[in-house]
Picture (cartoon, rainbow, N blue to C red):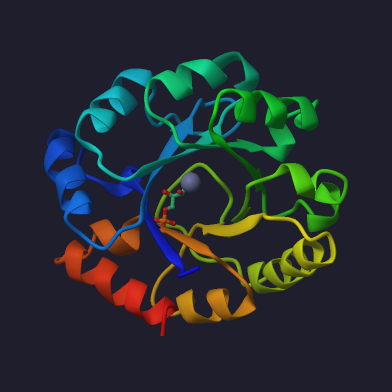
Length: 219
Ligand code: DX5
Ligand code: ZN
């Protein structure tokens, strides 16, 4: 499978959300990454259902929704109804992770689990075959524009090893501080999907930046 680029709309211009989503539709972006923060699980609030609905109205690509919220189980069906194709919950926010994963799949979405930088890969050993995607956080979740944490490479290699040993279908996503400086090394370590917020949207030419990043990781 070719490596995927998932621009994060957290760094988009919310006053021009239609323009920015259409830019992504017309670019080489594969997925649209959508960050939901509740001010409880993380020290920031991003946006909720009405904004995601507005994105859905225009989005023509896979909607990859990353929930940085407590009690995600409460909202699984709601996120499906507003367009989520992939729904990722945090390991640290789920007491009954196995149940949550089954509920996401029962709602006909791909089930993802995100791990904070301090959470070891080994916690997923007993559920890896139930996970469609593991999102390794390469920054502490809550804000865009932070610096990439170098320990991430080691975690990608460990996760790839676990997936291979378990013959699991799981994809590896990296989220936070992704740029052209670390993208190639990340996919060489085993990453399948790279999320990029600031690096794409703060660039003068986001369409070209996405194209270059995609070419870099598929070279
Ligand atoms: C961080 C979010 C990220 C964020 C990435 O909590 O989960 O998806 O948008 O932004 P950058 O690429 O700017 O680090
Ligand atoms: Zn994210």
